[in-house]
Image (tube, rainbow, N blue to C red):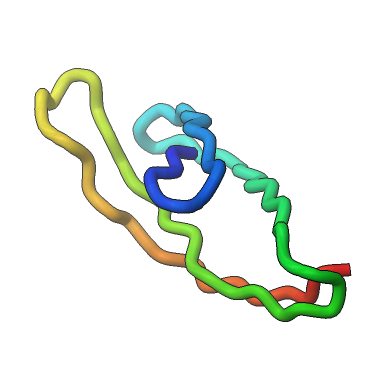
Length: 68
């Protein structure tokens, strides 16, 4: 998983071979006050060390949660 935007974001690549599946588990640590509703989008991108170009955005997964 690669994070480009966000305060305090880390870059954590996850690798998967063509035709294979992977499970990712993004961890988010909100800095808002308890009871605050936070929301955003987690983007899943592709990249290939062999292509020589940047990857493609595969999907965006919206999320919403209450800080607690």
